Length: 295
Image 1 (cartoon, rainbow, N blue to C red):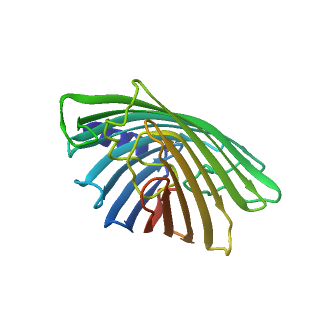
Image 2: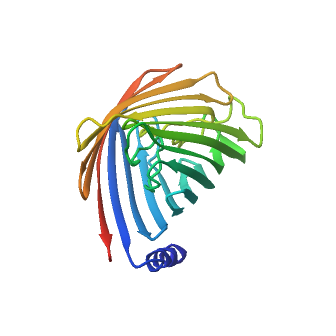
Image 3: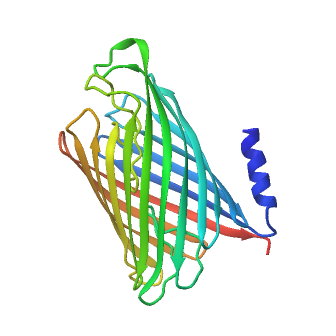
């Protein structure tokens, strides 16, 4: 906690003007799914720090899983860099810890705009024709620990596996439309089998619901089409395959961002279609408040 406070103070002291972004989202879905996600982003100059908390539970889980993380970012109109770290404290004999980094280059006709075009949302400066292209890559290493196997039998020795995610992503703003793609390949330091219990907390890019499993390949496609000056409808598609399993999941979501100067309202509907098991749906609503400090 002391390191986090020190980083926030450093971030605020890095420039004469700063900005604060506070957001909260609530997801409700099938099987009594309940998820809450909140963040506080503080920025000054090119630096920013973003602590966040992510909680969820459902009838498919036997516990309420909580994940806490923070991202330190450095963003200019050309380059974006970030480092991330966090953990899921032990619940139902499962826990994880993770750390990673990402980098993005921006090519823009206007040379401005620090918010990257990613599957999680747009925000690029709009122009005629091809106004902007973002491209980047990232890596995330996650250590999973579990005291149970897939049959929920207590193991004599704790199961440990390290997951390494390598991602490439690209986004473009073309005649006002934002389109982006994210491809993530996951590898593991040991061979997984069907007797290993799936990771109990899985966050897929562009998906509001939290799933379970050890992903292998995950592709997310996202598009935003500005409809009115204040409304940005969007559509997202994710397809993920999994290690030690024939399971694949497809998630379709539609929604909109409504921008009201300092306030932005968010709403989305998601439909999950697994290759094995029943379909499920979820609705997410949320809001964020942004304001500046200094001048």
